[in-house]
Length: 348
Ligand SMILES: [Zn+2]
Image 1 (tube, rainbow, N blue to C red):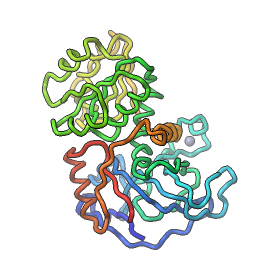
Image 2: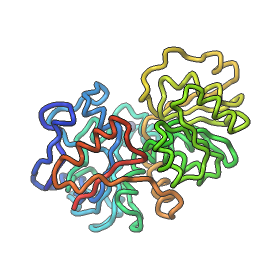
Image 3: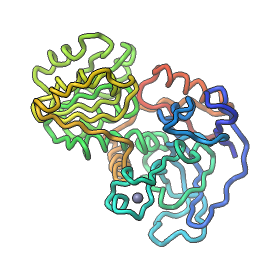
């Protein structure tokens, strides 16, 4: 079977398409024949040698993927209701499953929380064998690539907007970085939730792609005065801001909120802020939430929206993977932010 392996160094050139033996499921594991994968920013952090994801080489890449149950190992409990041939999504993050946090559904807060592809071997293989507890049912009508897009990016958007942000129908929300994986899914989710959604994007060419998927006011955040433009368009402050860019934008997004508004930060791709608007935070009684990944309930909620056609993730296929080159090019595009939505590939 083919596996996407980071071989000798932590850079895109060290990626190879390796030939490996199909794994035999261990005790409590299920083997999945993978069908579709989507790329995540975690992959780039691994490829750049980030200390947050200090993997040992050689390392199997990838956090996001969907496939079908291929073989069920010994010791898989009766609570695993799926059978061979059923579609399954892989939950990228998992805690210890036994502590209070895990049992209450807040597993990403568990001290033992680890992410496939980031802390543990990833899922970019034709077959993977994983604990049955990591597998979630996927409605058969959902394509593997669309399902894969919500296992991490989509679930993070749900955790940020719904769980932490407590977004309510009729509220006005701004998504900063609407063209990215989490950002575009947050916009689409916001529309389903009947929010009034505004989005910002970078280069002008991304607007055309976004506008095909969502009918919302879109503002480029490349102009220095973009917050003023956003406020001029909206006419009044926002109930919430979901910021996928983080870092340098923090001082600029808090003034856009109404008194008591909520800011949810899910990333830091623009680096650390050089100043923090403390006065904005306490003076207008704002809430600031940090979101790191999501819980399996977020994945299931997003899969449900996708299966009913309410949310259609933007996924550009970069394959077929007859060589590693298409995937290397895809990661280069990601590192240059030259994409909209999600990039993905299927095994053929
Ligand atoms: Zn736990």
